[in-house]
Length: 169
Image 1 (cartoon, rainbow, N blue to C red):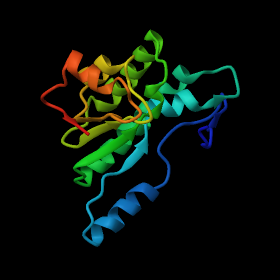
Image 2 (tube, one colour):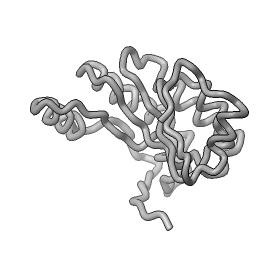
Image 3 (spheres, rainbow, N blue to C red):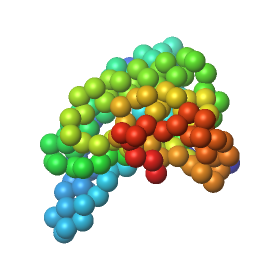
Image 4 (tube, one colour):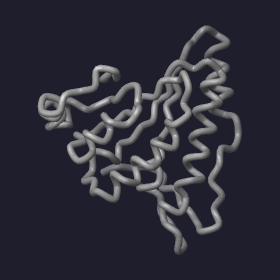
């Protein structure tokens, strides 16, 4: 059974990028010669696992979350970060057409102006059979797939191919 802290979002919750901890830790590592790849929970998983306590739902907070992630990506790009990773474990669950549309909206907004930074989307604990074609069509620079628990991962690649302009991990 998964154990994680579930964010609770009320109707008046303001979503935005606050604080500098992630940037401070990146700078600290860089100052001693360690080039890191920041790893952040992905927006799709964040909103799918959040508990909404009022009348609003995930789509009501999507634009604000996209803006927060765009700010995050831009800040790391300004620092000269080569790669940033978004973890999206929710993608191995059953995904319907509405989910795919929502995922696409989130990442089209986030990746639209990513500039020179490379973005890796990481999945794990299963395969992404319901969303594989969407993931490979989005402008990620790399996609991390699970070849152990992801029983259909290899057959998805054999059947659909994998874009030559992306890395696979």
